[in-house]
Length: 350
Ligand SMILES: NC(=O)C1=CN([C@@H]2O[C@H](COP(=O)(O)OP(=O)(O)OC[C@H]3O[C@@H](n4cnc5c(N)ncnc54)[C@H](O)[C@@H]3O)[C@@H](O)[C@H]2O)C=CC1
Ligand SMILES: O=C(O)[C@@H]1CCC=N1
Image (tube, rainbow, N blue to C red; front, side):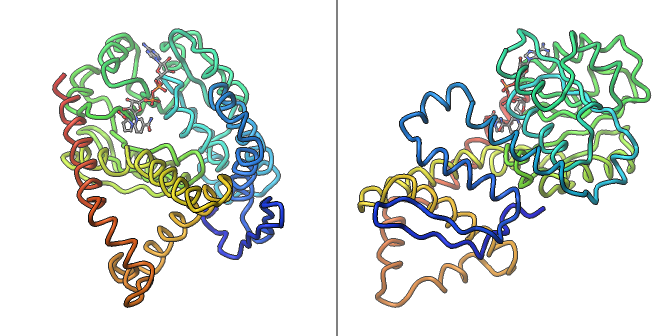
């Protein structure tokens, strides 16, 4: 399912500035993304409250899931294996991956369990809403899963691995998504020869547009790695790379969605300053980033060449680009990736 397949969408503004979209050719997922924006746009006064309660987000997820359940799936090969997946940690990243797997139909909700200390109620409710079993303990998740995804904050990983170390784990595959925590450290805390893989995903896994890179540990087999690539590829792209690159990946694609959300917000502000209604400005900003990203991915052209194709001599774009150069946008983005990668490296030593 290509969540960016909405190029034929038309957006027009009626006299009273309401947005009318005729996105009939969009994929189902994008319709739901659109629906979310519509909710946000038309009820902006509720936005802050709804952001807090996650109500809009949950509604969005539920509508995505129910529509996907009506579709046939080509992901039968892995789902027929009835793989049991367990998440230790049920927060933002666990939910993005877990919901992505279920939506992609690669994994059945009844085969997923998750644990979360403190039982943060909104995380628990959110997982339960999509049919995931909330386990009473991390040991429970371990016992009932073939693949265990460690999705707690980096500084909690050692505690969790020490806690579950006593459980038989020859048949289990461990996946850690924790930023900065090395395979060496993970393998040291688990029984000898435990199969482990590190993955650096990002939150767009939730909408099947994730970008993940994985690195296998010393005892992980080719089949283990293939399995994880297949799983993560069902919710975006997934590459295998040496572990020494993972901090850089963390700084780029792991943290990157946050940089892009800031860009969307800032471009939207620019539109509002020009008199556009907020919901239209945000929609145009997000669609522009998505369309430009899709052109990079689909044409294979250098981003600089694509930039040149927008930029007429003496035209509007070069004036805008000049301001971005003066503001140091490119240097700022490079520094952001570098600073986040450095922080990931620090996490591995803390
Ligand atoms: N949020 C993101 O965009 C990304 C996060 N990651 C990694 O994912 C991991 C999780 O991050 P988030 O989901 O953002 O954090 P989060 O704070 O949303 O979720 C952490 C979860 O761990 C649970 N938890 C805490 N202690 C526990 C314990 N002892 N046993 C079981 N569960 C426990 C919490 O209750 C919570 O459900 C981190 O290691 C982070 O580096 C990786 C890529 C992107
Ligand atoms: O901010 C963090 O530490 C996590 C890791 C990558 C994205 N979010």
